[in-house]
Length: 370
Image 1: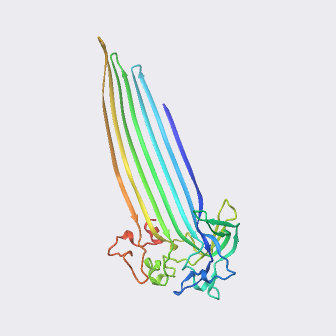
Image 2: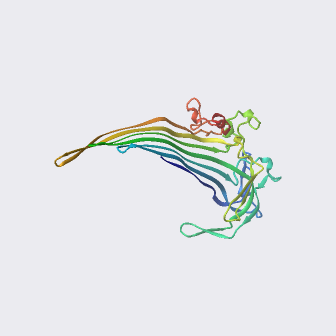
Image 3: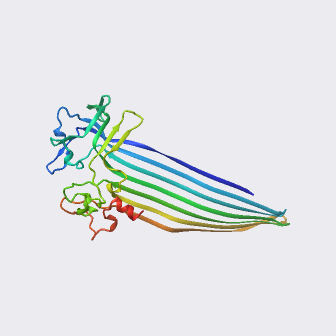
């Protein structure tokens, strides 16, 4: 008797932060003709610094797991010199699981800062504690000088914005059991070898993805995303399922070239589902149950007839069955588009579009699929 046990469980992953959308900006904010707080660089004076900064910070967290458990057992029995039997049993259980979570922050955006937070002169310079690095000369693809900038190494923003969050997961699991029985018999003039085997497997695959964005759109018109999921009377109350951002204190520290320091405070809570609207969600996969059965027998008959010493013959049987126990594909892309004064061709219309295109809040998604 021989028994082998195998266990492997490997984990890998890590975090990375990507900086994008570098550009010169003077973060001066004031209200426009519609009463909305927007970035208006034309109001910057000589003492208002223009900052060369990344506006987008993408936090990516990836994790992978590969696990295998297996047991293989062999039993041998020889009751006499002319016969022997072997029983093999193998069971495998494998799992491959990977996740990717993405979180994007922007250092500034329009339409989220309440007008009452502006200064007495009706303006707000959104950055403070700005530190810059060494001079950098920027060139185009032809090597021609564009300008000279001083990239920021640290700053604070009073209107940080949690822009989007996505989550993806790949899940693949396989369970397989194989049983094989072999026999061998030796007689005076006849040798026989036979084998039967049966294998049963279960394969399951899932690809799951969810995308979230903040609530945007002109808050003074029908563009406001909150109106797609809440009654107007609920907006701004504790009963609302949608909350619009009003600016989060964001601190960025790039002084260490090996790390990116990011801190959020006094604003949107990323864990508050009321701050997120669903842009897409899906579950795509299948469950399969293949079965294999096989048998064979071989004869070796000793005849000793002239030049003919022996005759070998035998038979084979095999049967493979692939059963698709389940196939599912669930994909939803909500329609959030709206005109300032009402719906348009790409807006959701419950009398025409299916429910999978209906705008949905993160709160409702969690209630539907706890």
